[in-house]
Image 1 (cartoon, helix red, strand yellow):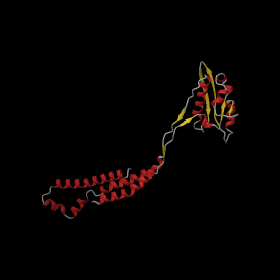
Image 2: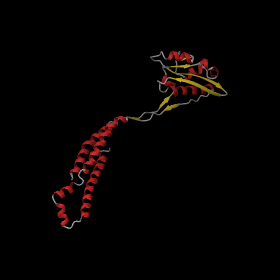
Image 3: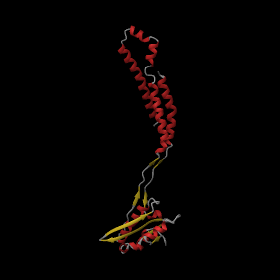
Image 4: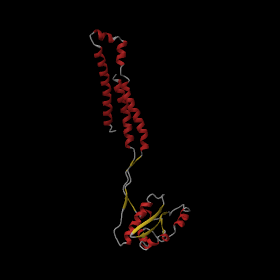
Length: 236
C-alpha cells in the first residue's frame, strides 16, 4: 500500500523541478507609461482641411497648428477631405499621414471632425491632444494638456497551455494512484481466508469494514498532504 504514497512522491520529485523552471522562464511584459502627443509622429505628415474650417480658422490659425505640431515645411498640408482621401490611398512608404482634421467654431463651442490613420495606433489620441492644446494656445493659455498611455501588463496565456495540461495530468495521476489501492486489503484477506479468522476471533463486520475504510482513507490523505507540501517546497 505504501507504494501508493511513494510513487506519487517520486513522480512529483521529478516533475515539479521541471515545472518550476519552466514557470520562471515565462516572459511577463511590464510596460511603462508613455506620453501621447504629436511628438511621437515627428517624421509623419498632418492635414488641416482649411477649406471646410472657415469659422475655426479665425480662431485656430494654421500658424498656431504649426507651433503645436512637430512639423517642418510641408509636413502640415491644407488639402480638402476628398483630396486627402485620393492621395492617402496611393502612399505606400513613409512619411504617412497621421490624421486629417477640420472643424467649426460657433457660440463659443468647438466642433472637430478627425479622419485618422488607424495603422498608427496612437494617431487619434495624438490628434485630439494636439487640437486641445491648439485651443488653449488660441486663447493665450500657456498651460498644456498632457495625455499618457498606461498599457496593461501582458502575459502570453498560450505559453502556459502546455504547462497547465501536463500539470493537470500529473496531479490526476498522483491522486488516482493511491485511490487504486482502495480495497486491496479486502481482496487479499478474502483470498487468504483472513476475514474468517478475524470473525472467529470476535471481530464484528462493522468494526472490520470501518478499519478497512479508515486505513485506506488515511493512506490517501497522507498522499494528498505530501503532494501539497511538495508544491509548497518548489513554490509552485
